[in-house]
Length: 206
View (cartoon, rainbow, N blue to C red):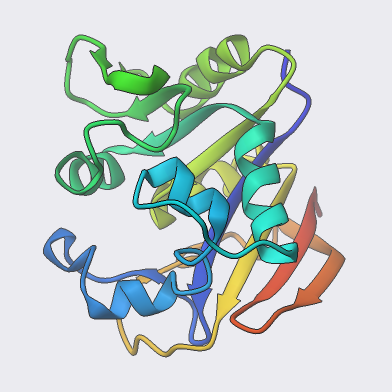
């Protein structure tokens, strides 16, 4: 069974992790949010966007996040946005469990990614992800509402934020509707780089 449930996201300085609409997902603002990741060797190899790329601490963090993940969980909104934006060889390369009311057969993609659609809530989705992850960890991939549902349920052990030097002004807030009276955080590390600041936290229930 997986030891740890975590999430890892890029966030703007004003607290947003995605634009308002799926149509803007790969737009200029979102690209600025992710500008720390796209030049990395690991990202370029994983997305098959070319050889080469930067190495160093940013690259190590991105690669470690991928390697520790044995399965992912996401919400329907994130899946619907990514379904049209991800390449055919989707970047997960593991089972992905989509929390959704839609009944749908598993969707297998090249490269090891298979999307499974779970219709009975966040906990059954997590249970399935734990089983699939084996001795690796489970990543709550997003979006923001799904992450908060898992946080409020006390099901997240830790998380990482890559804080990008960009302002959104509006969009999907990471901690919108979080139960602050229930969730307590312990900062475990902070690492600045040229393009972002890596913030890591352990999560405890108050």
